[in-house]
Image 1 (cartoon, one colour):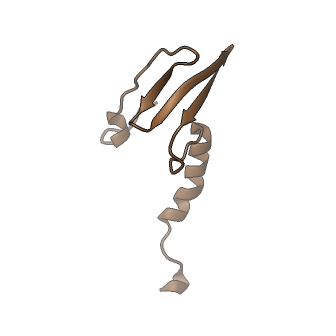
Image 2: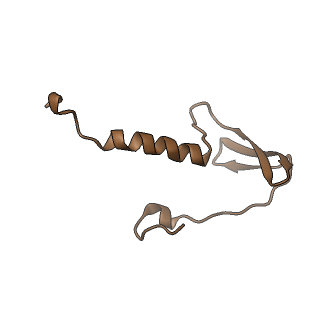
Length: 81
């Protein structure tokens, strides 16, 4: 997926790692992602993070963002002026 020039996301790169079941990776100092299991083409992962950290599957995150964005971009109701 190509990002438009100037988009902050276009400056990101993907880090690809190999992990085995039971191995993990750290995101910052307080988020650990563990490979819990592998069955066929599915990888089960566990995420240990502070309670204040929200964690969503990407497809759910995109749907939630689409629902929230229109509300955030609207101006104040006309009756509030």
